[in-house]
Length: 179
Image 1 (cartoon, rainbow, N blue to C red):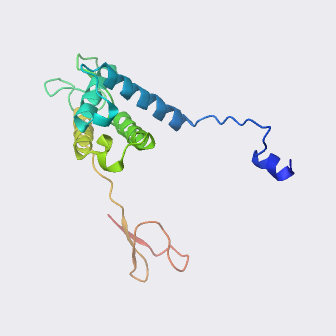
Image 2 (image 1 turned 180 degrees about the vertical axis):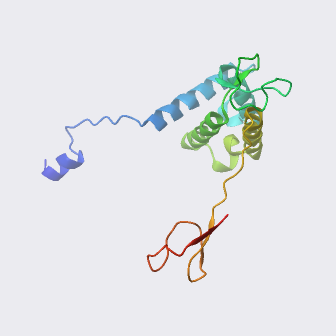
Image 3 (image 1 turned 90 degrees about the vertical axis):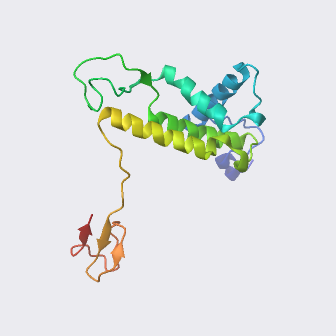
């Protein structure tokens, strides 16, 4: 075996086991959990017949395992970022966790033979649900979610940029930021 083969690990006598990344492991666990959820439905649902409605039901089912306090409209702590006392409002899955979960399931669906055109995790209904969860949780905490806009930059030659600080002459001392 040549030294190049040894360095690249392409030798016939070497059994290389690669440990999956944390993302890959989580994606596999999420995919298995979703498959288990579908198999336990009555009647069981094959993944090939899964729709965005099944995904929405799964997301709502996961709320019972959430750790994020979401204050209800009638709660005296609704809209307070740091409530001073406990309350009876429910725990839910955090929006960021759900968003990441959907991203992993969307990728896993296609890696397991699903077509991008029929991917139930890529449905517009899922995006709407996630947006509503994000806005509801932000309101309940008193922190309205606002999409960040890129700042416009005008350099000394009146060129408009995206705020990256890259000007043609390498100088940024005469840059004016507008928000």
